[in-house]
Image (cartoon, helix red, strand yellow):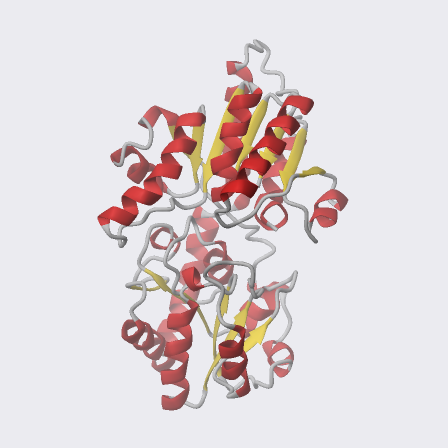
Amino acid sequence: MSVRLLLLDQIKALQADGHDVVAVCAPGPWVESVRSAGVEVLTVPMEREIAPLRDLRSMAALTHCFQEHKFDVVHTHTPKAGLIGPIAARLAGVPQIVHTVHGLLFHDRMTRLRQSIFWIPEKITATCCDRILSQSQEDVERAVRSRLCARSKISYIGNGIDVTRFAPQTTSDRSEKLQEVGLSASDFVVGSVGRLVAEKGFMELFAAAETLTNRYPQIKFVVIGPRETDQNDALDNDYMDDLQRRGVVRFVNWCDDVRPWYAAMDLFVLPSYREGIPRACMEAAAMRRPIVASDIRGCREVVVDGETGLLIPPRDVPRLVEAVERLYKDRNLAVQMGERGRKHVVENFDIKDVCRRLCDFYAQLSAGEGTDDGEPLHRSALSG
């Protein structure tokens, strides 16, 4: 899923720039979709959650994979691949090892002890890598301050979306989509998109929905995303079924094209605990939707508080209720924030700019490999 939804644009840009790119990921239903897009895929069993014995087997499999294919670069993404991938690449003797940070595991609202614990895997990754890229400007500064790595080792790459594809005029009338979940165009629709796990702040969103739907019958909540039953912080299915049965929240399983759902929303909410640069916020803002999001690294870069949306403390249900209520009551403000949000995303989070920076970075790596004429690297693996 990460390769297909988060990395495909970057892979295609590197291919267009002359690089031979291979995606290495866990097996699953998205593999054929990536292959059909013209990308070679190698599968290695990997668990998202910590599983020491299985992780050791995954590391051994990755080491064998990297040795067999003789990659010039291994470039990892996501926390698990970012932990075991660089170690495997170092054991395999890969010349260049790169990791992209999609949000540091430790964040400011953790206790000092928890920050120290989650700092350790990030430090292992940083030590094993030759270079680190970060989607977030704030994460660059945090990595240097916390002594994860020297400033010379980490660079800003950013994150972005196709701002042409995510544009209001690309979708039809919202009433057609709302009919699928029993809602009408006259409802005030609060939406969210993401994996249904506690880390995304959904328990707080559901609590806010209980309060707001009792207070304002016109406010309706719709959540789009897959149920992650194999995750440690997966949400309880019986609880979500009860919310749906009582009409507090409408749940929609994952769909390939979320644009009609963004268009159907009046307000987008992401009360997450930790983010890199939240893609869903970028997509919703590009569709001219005002955003309510957590006041955390990553979200602060996408949402300009008071201008394109409202930032609230994570895990703060009363403040979440207050923010949604404010934009429900002041529709003009909500519309103005949506307009400014699209402008902000177009100017700062265009995937074309991210791909350009990535290709420039790989050109520097090529030069560092001793190719005086700047020839593309022979073969690189992106591990997710």
